[in-house]
Image 1 (tube, helix red, strand yellow):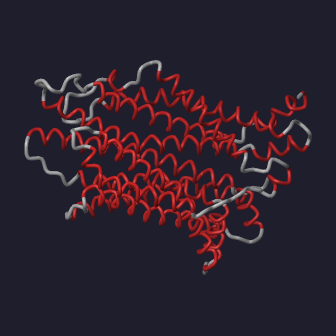
Image 2 (tube, rainbow, N blue to C red):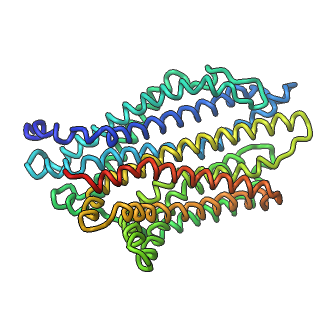
Length: 448
């Protein structure tokens, strides 16, 4: 134990400002989004009258439906934000793998002991990011009160969670980070040889795709019996349907890595150029990381697909106008939060992948690869998951719309709006590539 205490500073030493900031940024964004979404949904819930059978205003009559819409947005956004927190924990742990091996090599502790210190370090970063996320959430509450939902404007107090919820949220983020880091350790061989060889267990099974398909089939079957469940005026069927949609969207992250792995192996076998071959092999070696880099973008495109239907609704009465205004504003807010989530996920993940691959980039440059070729290899590594995400997002969004509405709106605006959403998603990818591009040159030309 004394040796472990002596060698702990090696494990906990900082890896550079950017490498250390990335996980904290991700934890901050995840916590702020979760708190904001929960606070917003609770604001609608508080306005539901205790008794809807008596005379109530048109706004009060709409509240139960708007609450369901807020719940729908919550079940879409919160799992993705939680996934970002888990990714941040794995990213933080990745910075420590070689230090873990060094401590094991000098006999500084058992695998459990050094792994425990690494997990505690991840938890500390999560605590810092979660606390910052709560502050960001509180600062964002005031601007959100200016949004027009067609109803009485919300106050800051309504958009904030109860005071006791914030310590619970911070604790939940820290526990999530610690659990994700602990699980990630099971995929790494914590020995000097294991880390040096980057010994990871990459298991991709078609079961991932089958699970996603089962969710889709289950949703299709449930929609056939949903009218009977809601025939008595209950909203139970709607709640279950929302749960199915959330599960299908979350299921994209289950099937996505398998699809990336299959596509990468095919691209590597048929690659006509060295850059595509290198990029495809990197994806095949770590398809989960490749999909995580575009998971936020995929989710944003799904939200854009859902909004195409809302955008075509035309109000005919004052009550309809109130409803349409609430749906438009809520939909755009959901898309805005999804865009922020996608930007953070894409930027953090792409930058982290360059940092992770810095030794390989340097070795390839020494072996004769030009910096421009390294750029093209990385572009190929990004392009394949992005193309797959476009297909998966389009399929998911319009499949759900087909099942729920029996078809898409026959309006050219739906196609135009979705096309603009896809362009916005691609703009996020381009921005992420541009932000992290200088790191490729730095890694290639690094002399140390």
